[in-house]
Image 1: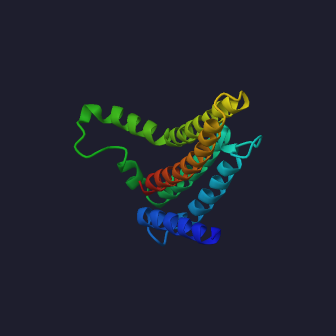
Image 2: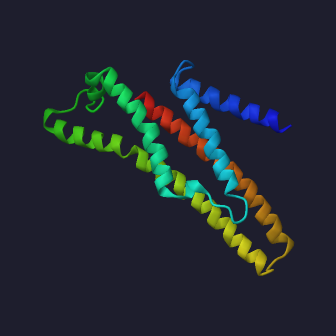
Image 3: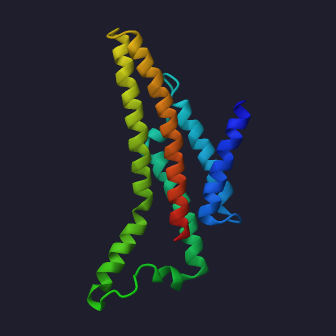
Length: 178
């Protein structure tokens, strides 16, 4: 039943996170909780006239920033020298060192923004497509074909919501390892 499907999903997510950050990581329960809650929020958005909170940039940015900032602050507090060493690849020519450090710093700081934009774009694209097909249904353009297309898009949107969560969690765990 539904519980066995949920159990399989949770086992999959836990194994993915554990393979990336290790099975004893403090981050695993947090990421699993965020995964489940945002997946539910995205699914609620498929209900007609319901609001999808993940289609708002401030929500996505807050979520991505907080999940990114925690591991970064932890890493800096553990070993500042090691963390700073990641800003400069080995073998960098001396004249390029200031430029590389600036570029690497920008790359690290911009990560929450890129995660947020990726999530927002995928969620909005799916909802826009559903709304366009729904408009054709209201106009009674093609009848049953439109109903079939709408149902297929809802299933596709659920799959996109799930995959988007998996990508988001994978990127957060990869960013936290660095």
